[in-house]
Image (cartoon, rainbow, N blue to C red):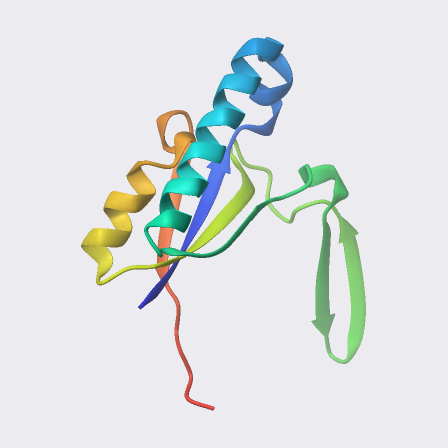
Length: 117
């Protein structure tokens, strides 16, 4: 089964980190990505650009509207994701707990609804 791990962090905290600390955490992400790649659990994953680059799209009564940035103001922002293969939710949670951002943000784990084509 596939699970989407959404990584939420305070993106402003990254700007405040000393370069050495930022590089250390980036190295941890690289090591984590390599470990799940080697374990055959990685389907996909990427970091996202900062929230100020986001556009929220809505269709209401046939009319398209767009808003700059994310819809909600929150303490933590969606910063990236991993799409993983796991036997069950317990394995997905164990994999998510090893994502470096789990130490200073949160990881939302959601099963992917798989449709038969």
